[in-house]
Image 1 (cartoon, rainbow, N blue to C red):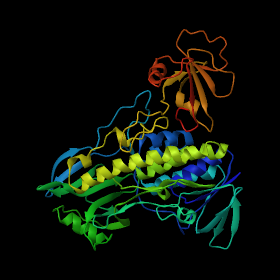
Image 2 (tube, helix red, strand yellow; image 1 turned 180 degrees about the vertical axis):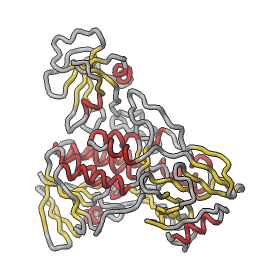
Image 3 (cartoon, rainbow, N blue to C red; image 1 turned 60 degrees about the vertical axis):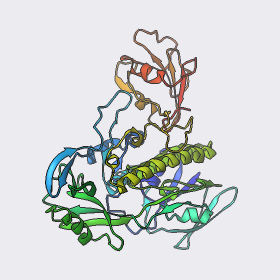
Length: 461
């Protein structure tokens, strides 16, 4: 089987890694002449870290990034306090990565490209997809070079202006607000403490100002602030915004910057025959809440195993469109609070972590589903070695856990036993020495026989 992925950003790279490790022939093309060099999406949520654990890149991501920083609040130029958007949470047996992680998007993409190269695939730059046709057997892709090629499936991970989405005629309803504009840029500010974030505002309006978040490994800050109509993403615009709050901070350079407008959209369909949409090609988000890139990565993680198995393909749209609608609602509400200067816009709750995603029972947009993600837990293997349930799940397979009874004699099936249980008749088993596995899974409404099937994407079947 051959799969073409249009778009070499985090969504396309995640999907390519997942397919390549399953032995699928995958080709990744991107119309850009060079790799993206800015921070853009710089927040990796806990559920995405779990995805990266499975894909073999979490250690590199953790090494390159850092925990979300506290922010030093400067009002009228004076530092008055330090605060966090959300309190840091301690790891739990069922949640090994409880906090978001800060890492610039270009750095993350470099890590994902390296992993993909280990699997034998590289992103083809300056290779623009300009058209496609499909029949019941395959998709024919046309490139600007004049090349045509046939693929079993094509995935558009090519951003909000997706060529793939337009070529398939899928509508992209939503809203664009030209009256609210943000400048986001990676800047050098040598006079600022790089170990902490900074918030600059006026004492009379403390919720409206300039945020500067340190970007680990770069010596730069990501600057984010609202600007007026007609203002651009220049260093002058950003310096003027800072000067308006008597900050006394001098910006010495800008590595990358863009003007963002609220463009909040959700594709009517995520699939047209053998063509699929993922990431920004299917949904575009406000930057508030740090959800857009994470939602796209989880699109890819949901789609990869289904494409490889060529099964349950219709469930991709059913599951992921509902999730995207919920996330868009949360992000949009947060953006409105930010624009209105509400304090709530600077706080983060568990709904942003990605750990409550549920594919079993979809809820109305904006509701927090109970979640059907298979939790982690420390256990022991038959030799007494301490491992994790995530170690059993890691890889392209589904995993069956049977609590308190022998498991079927099949690959990736394990009995989960309590200390002292007789392992006779169990060809594969682990010991829940601390009781955390039984505790974590007791709330998941396991069937009477104790069997729980964990899908390849870490959700309950």
